[in-house]
Amino acid sequence: MLKANDIVRFQECFDAVFNLIQDFQLMCRFALLCVVVLGCSSSAFTAEPLATTDRICPNAVHPFYWQYKGEELLLLGGSVDDNLFQLTSLTEHLDEMRAVGANYIRNTMSDRHDAGFEVYPFRKLDNGKYDLDQWNDEYWERFETMLRLTSERNIIVQIEVWDRFDYSRNHWPPHPYNPANNINYTHETSGLAAKYPKHPGKNEQPFFFTTPQQRNNTVVLKYQQKFVTKMLAHSLPYGHVLYCIDNETNGEEAWATYWAEFIRAKSETENLPVCITEMWDDWNLTGPHHRRTLDHPKRYDFVDVSQNNHQKSQLHWDNFQSLRNQLIEQPRPINTVKTYGADGNKFGHTSQDGIERFWRHLIGGAASARFHRPPSGLGLSQHAKAAIVAARKLESLVPLWEVTPNNALLSERSKNEAYLAASAGKAYVVYFPQGGKVNVDLSAAKHRLQAHWINIDSGQWGVKSSVPASKSVTLQAPSDANWCVVIK
Image 1 (cartoon, one colour):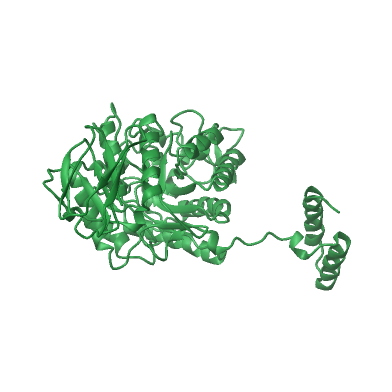
Image 2 (cartoon, helix red, strand yellow):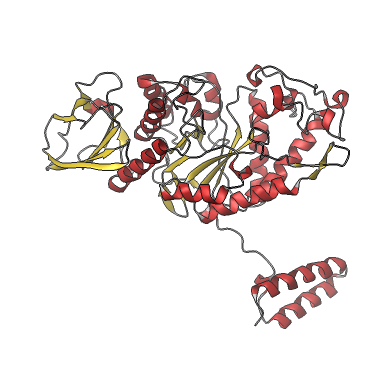
């Protein structure tokens, strides 16, 4: 019997000869002869299509959450960087994530040289310029490796196709798309300048205005299409990938619409369903930019509200709940792939802010929560690990899709003191950001309940105690740390 490697080598030879045969009758006879010689079915020559049931999608029963391989799942993550496919120590980092229960990464297709290990996707010629018609194999091999390693570990990948920070300020002058650095177009034919020194939020970079409904810049769009097509050739066969068009954009809606439809068309051609969103920069989730996503459920399968993580305290919760309530009639997963907050970062967000935001989103009904990379977030630090471990402990008692945010069951509560999600009479989950004491309405419960405390700062179990079912029960956190209590 032939071994797997023998079959692979035989298939390569078969393909070479197969392409040389033009006569259809000879082609059929040759294929039949190969099947007889190998003593196996034609499936030895073709890859089995990936079943659509193995692809991540909104859960049919609890559509605010995800399912993958037929099972509901809560996405939790934290990592040292955002363009993880570029990491040379990726295997160890993914294993470190899995060890604490993380199953979710952000992967920007970014190539800006921040840390020194990044590479560009295009081939660099001997004359020092890039050819946008040729690929840098190392870039794409790194990408494929990331997809394979995460698939093996059941870690969900949220890709961001375009990152505006790659194409402005000090990252633009050396970039292959800059006409000064490639052999494919000039400043005049492309309409791209040598410098864009202002913050990309100023939207002065024509790179993001190339689509037909914008400036119809076919010279540059051709290479953008080629890049996305190449990316999808690698990623579409994998079922654990989500797609986000941009990183925190405030650009034109037409840009996002074009690329969402471009990706959708490619996926439908391959019969490989995908889920797509856009990440708007507006911190106000009731703002008009977010309506571009909320009003188009067929275009955008889920919502990403990472920029809500610039908000603090009660406003952070209220902002999220206002958006979630807008989706009640047509629920979709709401992801938060970037949770800001770490001591010493330039935005002034503390580590406590990061933990609070992560946990408010969990209790508030988010489908995912991930700590942003350092120094803007906690990454996979000890604080982040403890918070993720604590969340998995909570999940072992009550899956969060079985409860609903309901602060109305709390009384004697001060601002930002506690947050609650419940399935009245069955289970109650209360988060205390910094200790505190509140009253909880347990009148819907018919029997005595048990309270399970979890220390979020350590990731360890706290005490368990019996709780009577009554109109109002007082709960007090064991200390002024971050605590969660599950009553069931």
